[in-house]
Amino acid sequence: MGQDTSISWCTSTFNCWWICTEVSDGCDNCYARTLAKRYGYGWGKGVPRRVMSDAYWKEPLKWNRLAEASGEPWRVFCASMADVMDDEAPEGQRERLWELIDTTPHLTWLLLTKRPQRYSRYLPAGFKHNNVWLGATTENQENYDLRWPILFKAASARYLTTFVSYEPALGPVRLHGVMGGYPIVPEWMIFGGESGPHRRPMECKWAEDVLADCKVMGTKFWMKQMDARTPAEGAALIPAHLLIHEHPQK
Image (tube, rainbow, N blue to C red; front, side, top):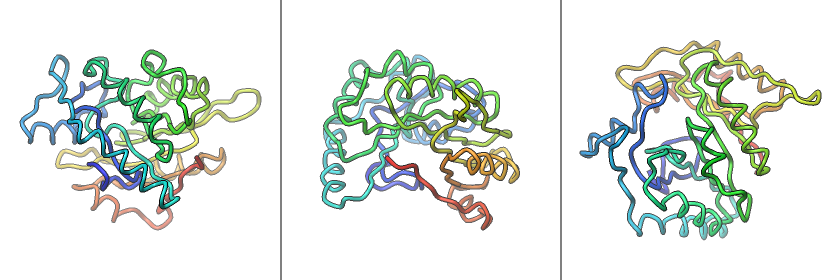
């Protein structure tokens, strides 16, 4: 976590706080919960969230300077150890994030949640530099059909790029939706099988089918990993025809 991360689809990770509450089957083998407990922190509803230090909050300011100097895209995933739309977020921390985003125009902030219905409640009306992509996790068709329309509505109201994290992949997902004769689909789809000792198996066909949909509808595709003991092992198992790493344009 931090400037250097093993998550392949972003440059860095940033957590306004640690700890979350499970909301769906995709949370059953949560790596963040396991890691938090390893450090002695609780998890779930009613558990006080761990607030991060002032020094930690200054790190993205350094990344912003580095991104400006390099001219290269710098994508920050928020949050890997929490849910940025958590109803139990520590007081003032989400608002502090919005201020930080507006202070770091050379970073692209990737906000990911299993609670996209909370975007309308907690997001500001807009961001000063529009340097935010809105995402939702959709581990199967049921949650895609539930969460994607809500995500699309929130992002459209703010003219923000959309993405879906189809991880852990627990069932098939097909992209669909039309408005005014045009497909309404995410601009980016991340696919990943589950990792860990209790991982649930994925089918290669799920990745192949959603990739086919992405190609037809113009959605960029990122193949993160197959199901395996560790994310690194899962990445090494990706077959050649699925080894695709695309980003949408900012």
